[in-house]
Amino acid sequence: MNIKINKEYTLKLLEEIINIPSPTGYCSNVMSYIENIAEEFGYKFKKNKKGNGIIEIEGEDNTYCVGLPVHVDTLGAMVRSVNDDGTIKITSIGGNLYPTLDGEYCKIHTRKGKIYTGTMLSTSPSMHVYKDSKDKERIEENMMVRLDELVKSKEDVQALNIETGDFISIEPKFAITPAGFIKSRYLDDKAGTACALSLMELFKRLNTKPKHKVKIILSTYEEAGHGCSSIPEDIDELIAIDMGCIGLDLSCTEQDVSICAKDSSGPYDYDITSKLIKLAAENNIGHAVDIYPMYSSDVSASLKGGNDIKGGLIGPGVHASHGMERTHVDGIKNTIKLIYAYLTE
Image (cartoon, rainbow, N blue to C red; front, side):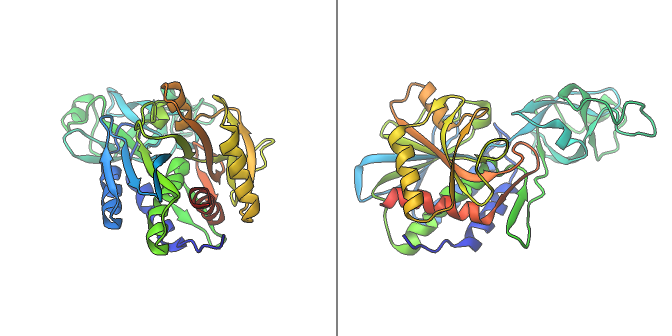
């Protein structure tokens, strides 16, 4: 297989979707953006009742269907309450690494449509004032948002129509280095999303079709654990494109596409995993096969939801997941190449 990935298109797409805030439960804006892309390429797009998007790509044989779940929802937070001094107490969305959030810029998205900026901080934010500023544990109850508004009381904040349950998104700080590294929050899983969406550009540019019908599923509740607990009935197998893990005894690097043989939910389908490994080796695609002990995917959610499917899991290697993440252009390209090979060979 010798295909040319449109790197410029994929990276532009990745940057754009990363910069659209979409903490779990607040995904309508990024979904509208992706719907427009699908329609530009001429592919069918629809949403299910919980808000997951589904893009259908016709195959040479439409009697069998391969689902490709990716998740557009990210970590984030919500307003839990307002403190007497006008700072905001938070509640986490997903498994945030709080030490990496201390000092990060954020946005509060009110239900009235107003967006306010702020900074996520420890409740002991100054070493000139608080004796425990350096040692205070960075956990949820010790974190707050400092609003960039003239507020000094709870009543001042309430006058801005900031209320309990408003979403809080963290600035991703997207950057690409000269060496090809992609640094940003939320590469989990917007890197995988960009890989899946790039298939639309690839099929159109090469004027090819997948062997079987493909449904890209844009999951909106993966970080909450139930993103693809329900899927279209015609799907026969699911291959999630999520992040690949790096560290400890794992062999994956940021330049690889990772093939997961087992995660915390158990082994992935033997035949699918074996075929992915075989295709990667035959096509000289940089890859690694690993076990993820503290991980589950949309395939896991689908199986636990009672869907009669078999599943696999791949994704570009991502370092420092749930913190300041990093992958590489090569890992993105290798992921696209592997899933394209799987769908066409």
